[in-house]
View 1 (cartoon, rainbow, N blue to C red):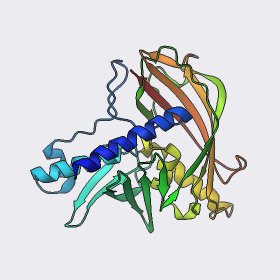
View 2: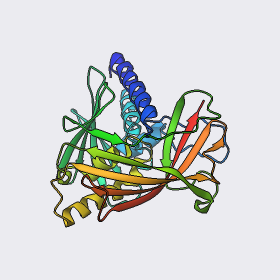
View 3: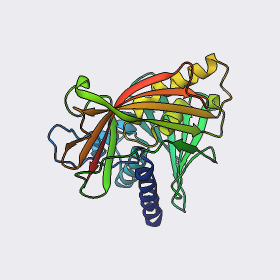
Length: 295
């Protein structure tokens, strides 16, 4: 891949991360480099040649290794890592990554990554009969099949005491980073996010929807079954043509404190996801943990 494309790509990610820090959503993350012993490195994305050969099905060559690793790095930007990867198909035209969810191993998708000259990264996601193109734009926006996805959100006031600098790591997990679930105490205010997909919900695959409701957080695989349930509810209520998904969440801090380490913040979120504009009626629920590391 061309060097100037990669440089533009990282410039785009800086823009996205900066915007998301402002609006309080979870942005793109890199490998966790914190020094707290109770955190494990859940962003281990480096593969040795033997591992890559197992995924590809034949011994990999030097040129292949670099291209494969660049693709895996791009997958990490939408929250997919080793836990999600099943295999890699290499043809003369494309490199296809076969992935699975981490909350429902029956859900699989094939992803082809295309990097564009201006720094956009496009993910062609094939899941069953559905094919969606999800694009991270160099302008800091997400695009679904060419249309900008519009996010409306409630403003959150975050306590910044103890923050040493800029946030550089954010990720999500099904498991608490410290203590047990019962150690996390409810805090206010609650959060609300509305997505305008500008596309019928029934025409969006589970992986694409999970990525959009997760907004490129790490560990997006934990949201795939939630995305599937949102679509099931929409179908049940004849809402497959809606362009909207709305979700609300309650926040919980470890023993009432947001900060749990040096520049390290965590919260439990109990979220409800509704098809349509209004947060009423049937919903899909998900409880997970969000972590932020500042330096």
